[in-house]
Amino acid sequence: MSSPRRFYYDLHIHSCLSPCADPDMTPCNIAGMAFLKGLDVIAVTDHNSCLNCAAAMEAGARYGILVLPGMELCTQENIHVICLFETLTAALLCSAKVRSLLPPVPNRPDIFGSQVIMDSRDTVKGHEEIFLLGAADLRFDRVAQLIKSFGGAAFPAHLDRQAFGALGVLGVFPPDAGYSALEVSSSCDRNLFFSKHAELQRYRVLYNSDAHRLGEISERENTFALPELSPRAVLEYLTPAGLDSARVSMQERSDPLQIQEEQGR
Image 1 (cartoon, rainbow, N blue to C red):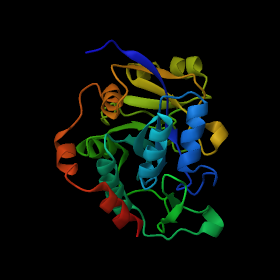
Image 2 (cartoon, one colour):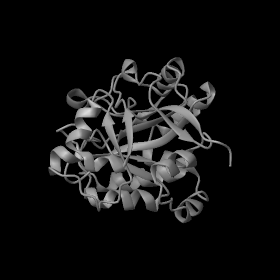
Image 3 (cartoon, helix red, strand yellow):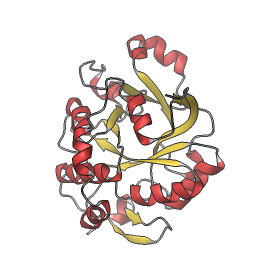
Image 4 (cartoon, one colour):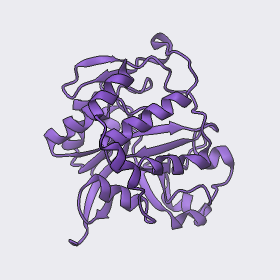
């Protein structure tokens, strides 16, 4: 195995599929901005959906940037959790599962914003009709296991925030919830935060942007050490106990384009 190298990352970025994101957050624009900022790997993590991941991955490949497919899942308790996947197929299958757990409430673009599905050249392919900012019928302590069953990895988002952060919602961070990593906002006073929550220092800690606008995507500042730049290497970094690869091998026999088309109808 080769010696680990350090790679610049931002694993929490919203595209125009998220109704709260700026319309300029298109797959091409996100990949281009990540390239300009000197990042090596990013993840597109829209609210409760992976329907712009295929486009972002293709756009990133043109810039030489690794794009992981993912989503920001909102749990039953209104806690946000970042979910990342090794393959597009796994991401889309999990996305369909999460969609089935959302309240069947239609989006109101005039109130909440549009939920735009694009291709890798930023051509509009359609719109997600279900309101993506709802809470899935899934408890916080069940998310990590669900994502692992799809060969992925999950970590709680912006743990330092009161709104939608596990600490703010629950009051404590449950050590038996199945997570190996966690996210703290880039703007957080890290020394102060961990002086108050020393018990969290045993987790892998990520500092992501939660970008909803192009200028908010992380600068070239946060790194992790990986043996290679690949989706599996990133997920193994986030899950030291190991990945569940059995489900992925089954999923790879499915056609991701067909899954995408079925979900986008």
